[in-house]
Image (tube, rainbow, N blue to C red; front, side, top):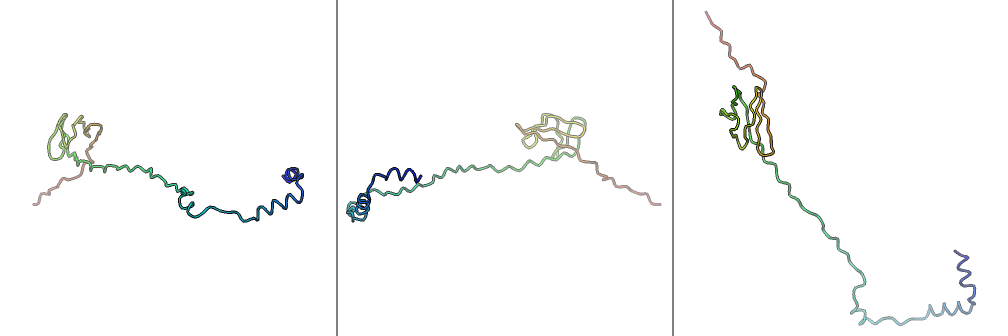
Length: 129
């Protein structure tokens, strides 16, 4: 880079350089305040756009309380009543009744209810003499 600068300014004399420096130091007349007051603001303030989209997620409704208590043949004892295939329970339709469980459907929602492990709820009575 220094080589290029010396080539460009090589034809200037010392007097020409001194004249250029004098012109730089001369007081220049500026713009009046009345003109400046009417000019447009030179600085642009860029405001950030708020491009956030608020999406409300619907709260999950609590699942219907479905309790399978017993199965006998093609009937199931669900929520204190005997039901068969095709019957409705809390918005669900019974689609299948098997030996160990029941399949219910409500639109696209499918629920499977199964019988729990049998509990030993028998009371043994002993005979006294």
